[in-house]
Amino acid sequence: MVLVICGLIISIIPGLPVIALSPEVVFIIFLPPLLYHAAWYTSWSDFKQTIRPITLAAVGLVLFTTVAVAIVAHMLIGDISWPLAFLLGAIVSPPDAVSATSITKGLGLRPRLIAILEGESLLNDASGLVAYKYALTAITAGNFVLWQAGLNFVVMSVLGIAIGLVVGYIMSFIHKRFVCDEVIEATLTLLTPFASYLIAEHFKASGVLAVVATGLFLSARSGTIFSHESRIMTGTIWSVLTNILNGLIFILIGLQLRQIMSGIEAYSGWSLFVWGFLVSVTVIVVRFLWVIPATLLPRVISKKIRLQEEFDFRNMIIFGWSGMRGVVSMAAALALPLMMNETEEFPLRNLIIYLVFCVILSTLVIQGFSLPWLIKKLKIEKYSILAEEYEVRNIIVSQTISHIEDNFSLVNDDLLHNIKSKYEVKFNRLQKTELPANFFGKGNLIGGEIFNDFTKLQIDLLNVERNKLESMHKSGNVNEEIFRKIEKELDLEETRLWMEMYEE
Image 1: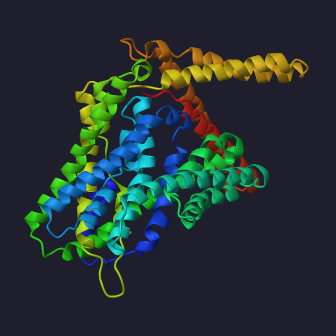
Image 2: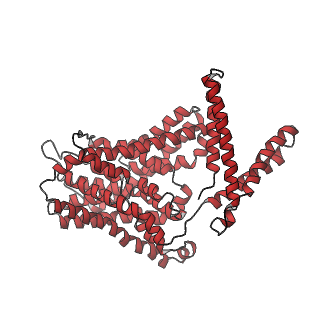
Image 3: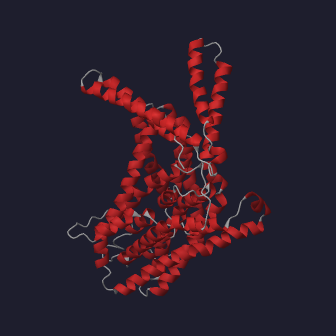
């Protein structure tokens, strides 16, 4: 939301240059890393369990939105032909993976709903971009056959997933067998999404689905193929990279928006406002028109679904209001070719980019800002994973203590005592929290406060160690190699302690 507003502000600053990337490279620069990062943090287990609603939204809703927006745009704007109208619909049809994850984070939504939103945002880019390519082909080449498009969509999707899985398998093999340096591993993770995307595109497959499949495959195995140093480094690098890419795409649109607006001066300001408003309203309303039957009809048809899946109409409303558009739609708009051929400009390119920006601005700002308020008004009980985290920690520590007792009997008594006492202390600390039984109860979280106070005390002591280490380093009383090693140990320990803090 901040980025799209900043892009708007940049567009009105006088004197800034117009910087435009070549349309051919926009997708290659922005799409693979952003989708790969989103796939990396998507749970494969949750993805499998919610594949039916994800598929309905990622394919059916995207195509339904494409058609609806095309009809509205063609009726409103006389200059827009049917192929151009379908192109606009394809660009704005897929909700954004980054937007959905960022805006719903911390709102306490149910894990199943979060999984559907994230999964939909990953897969709908594939169907939206396939529709985008066919609409672009219809405009530039002048031919389009529906049954061929449908068949090609299936072939492209299956082949894209297959290529993504193959690339994921090859990269996991390389990481496990040949790479032992975290810098090289981090570098390979940066190259992986581009390799997956470009290979798939070379074979006329879906590069989007290839990247998603590679990301899901490697993410599910990251615990065994990466070292802890690599995971810490790559996580930091990817967070920085995705922030830069998200910011850059809206800076670029901000720098081009003045030129885009000058390219549509032939239309009145009122007409442009009405068109942008109505196209945005169509995108929002169509999502509700699809969500209601797509949610209720499977429950009517299947008794198994009614028994296994909990239904709450409020979740249906939240899902309908969570269709924010973002960086993928913006990248698709900027990737429109400048010229049809050597002499003819691409028709209404500036108008299409303007309408796409209106949809992104409307959905991100209006829906994004109002989503927390809507959740509060619907009185949805905030879901917390802390109780689940508590149980998992208990099981891990208990199992570790049992392993020590069963397998370390021949170890030196002093060493055995020190090792076992470390985990017994951790187990005792876990027992002092009341989170599982009383997290949303009327009482105060006395146990949780004690746990957090103990953790904060350890962090304070780490800072004492760090200050002493830094003073020794400044006075030249510690070797640089030793300093860096101990500094890293303290950083890792502090990271672990902050992750153990119990927060609502």
